[in-house]
Image 1 (cartoon, rainbow, N blue to C red):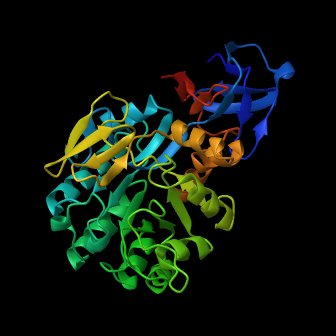
Image 2 (image 1 turned 180 degrees about the horizontal axis):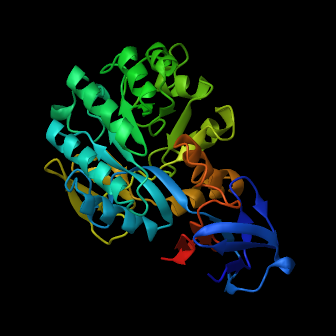
Length: 379
């Protein structure tokens, strides 16, 4: 097969920006990174400046292309969401189910297992955000469906963790025990703490049991205080615990984002999520969740009472927000590629090196999306 040679843009390899480098792709994989003057003959893809980076990875995607996973928990629904976000630069993602009934949860897991069996492009696993949350910090989740985790739930989730490529679970200390978290972590699930009014002690107990991330930092959780650090303070203080961030300048104020990025130890301890909903990649101005209308107005998604209900941004947009607010481009790109890939245990994604997947995004000089490739093929 003829090699495809990408030239003409700075290259972000998952760690650093590199100049005057050619990316050589063969059989859907990165074959080499060479000085541009040494690039072999082949099918040249000449880019007009900007940055060529690994395909972006999103661990919290509720919907896209007019589809919400809660409303369509099927392989076809998952495929539609993955396809919509691929066109937005996200070549790998975790379709995310918001708090729902046991039946819908089981259907989503079954669909995820079938999607994985088919190796559905872009599908990296599932994220179940609830229903085991604290109703005091429900956000847009339906409080009628929030409940503690029972033994049947635990058995279902442990089994799913063994059959899916990745299973991420957002839970609250008020609704799960450290023993349940330990069992889930031992089964391979990525346990994330969120939608909780817990104090720092409750969060620390779940971190000690194996929880590794915090869901959309600052949103739907107890805040940092002078005498009680809350979940925000516990997340910022804990080593080895990563935190997701919705960088739309709506869910978290820019100054707060900057403070968190400065406070969190380790540059790779935070990652970007879109928290995208059904309207992503469309011009729809409303959709339904659990029978309730979600409105799209001025870059915000809200219930009719004004409660934020997901975000109206994609990952390239979130990268632009961070860079505009003074975050180094390399760090912003890592937060949308290498960091989430490592959390998933996928060393073939989120970076560009010989043998990795040739999933690529081209961002122009203004960091707007200019091109997307999966396996070296344009989308």
